[in-house]
Length: 113
Length: 109
Image (cartoon, rainbow over all chains, first blue to last red):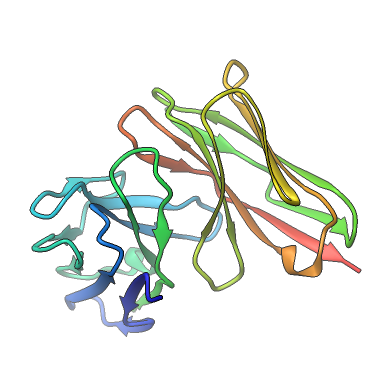
C-alpha cells in the first residue's frame, strides 16, 4: 500500500533557486495538506486543499504556492528559496477537510544554502 | 492566540506506565489528536477525542477535558519501540490542526 509518496527525499538548494516538492496519494482522499516541521516547533500548516481545484492558505503560506489539478497530486513550489525555508516538509491527506485522520508522507528534508 | 503546550522530554522505564500531558488554547475546538513520530519518520495517528472522557485502545489511552483545555496520553507496559516523539494537536474552528512541539519519550531498559 503506497499511501502518500513524496519526492525528493532530500535536497540541497541554492538560495534564489526555485523548486517543486512533489506529493501523490492513492487513497482518493479529498483533502491534502503541506506542513513544515522545524526543531522545537510544532508542525505548521503551509497550504491545504479541500478538493481538486481548490486551495487555501495555512499559518505560514508566504514564499510557497500550491496547485491541485487532480485528486491525487498536490505539489508545493518555492519560487525563490531563502535559507529560512530550510526545514522538513510533510505532505498529508485526509478523506475530507474536518476531524478526519491525516495520513502523512515520509517527508522531504530541504536545506537552502 | 492559539497554543499547545506539552513537555519537551520524558524518560520512563520499560514495562512501566507514562502519562504525557497536553494543554491547548484554540479558537473553537473540533477535537484533540495524538500522533506518534519516530525519529526521521512521518507522524502516525494514535487517537482522537472530541468528547470528555477516556478512550482506550490497547496499551494506549487518551483523555480529554474540554472545560480545562487538557488532554493526556497514557502508555502502559512500555516497550523499547515506544521510544518516539508524541505530538498533541487540537483542531480549531476552521478545522485546521494546531500542533504542539512534541514530547520526546525515552524508554530505558
